[in-house]
Image (cartoon, rainbow, N blue to C red; front, side, top):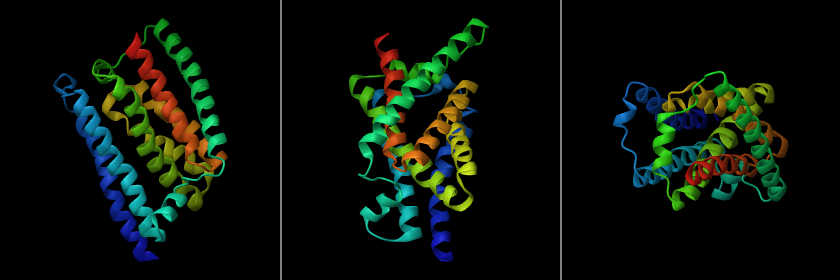
Length: 225
């Protein structure tokens, strides 16, 4: 078992370097120099899926063995309770969006700037295809990694009380590239909601549905307005 853990740890080096290494590097780059096009966004989404979801699956396979079906089951990709989990995720995301929207409006009234250059650049390059692909691919890649693997492994090791805030913190810090406090705190807070959904329904469909809804509503609002 020790050798399996070592192998899993080695596999996890890749996504951690990719997620947090790029985030740190981006802090020293000029956002104006960021090369963002619809094609670049689409490629980066598939790369994220490969690195995060792929590493979660490989690390799970290294730890426990088994078939692809077994690996997905251990990542809480399950048919049981899937519909109810998805509905709960959508409802939770809508409620969180309402609370976040009120908080941001209040922050603006007190003179706090909530605009973000990178978010604006992404919005400017949004297309009908990306309007759907961004929420789908980001939800799948990030929830399989942060909730299906990281959180649930931590929960089995140290319990829910530690697993939920730690996975949420890792999720929030993963958004450092946006270089704005709101873009780190909001994902952290949302990560707590996603973590609670994961523990309540024990089906990754709950946080995936919530994550998809959150991103889709935000992107649609920006795209249409």
